[in-house]
Amino acid sequence: MKIRTVKIIVDVLMVFILILELVPTEILLVEIHFIAGLVFVALFIVHFLLNRKWVASVKKAFKAGKLNQKTKWQYIMDWSLLIVWSLVILTGISAVGYVVDEMEQLIIFRHIHEVSAILGTALIIVHLYQHKAQIRSYIKKKGTVKK
Image (cartoon, rainbow, N blue to C red):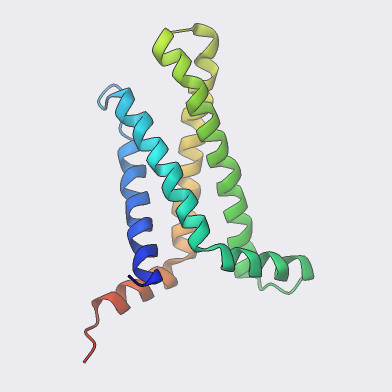
């Protein structure tokens, strides 16, 4: 399987799981939310590994001051995503104690988790917008028939 195909599959799965994760836990079982969150983390790691060459080359160019404005904003957005989603993951794990034992002192983690997840989702939308040309090229190349 080509790397491009793997990237598309991982990215589509990430979006699907993100949408699933946005379903309130009053509707979706908390256990499903937790498992889907772990799958999302695993997919993020795969996504990062698949794009590590881009990250390394941009990091090098960023330090050298040789990035155009568009790529610089993409790089900043990627770091913002990493920070915010790390907060989502850590507070999500911490909030499990509140959900399971209803320990009131842990409710703060649930609130931080919810707010940071909303912020993280907004950042993902911006991230997708920043990479719209690349996404279009994947779709166009996938849709063409080779003779």
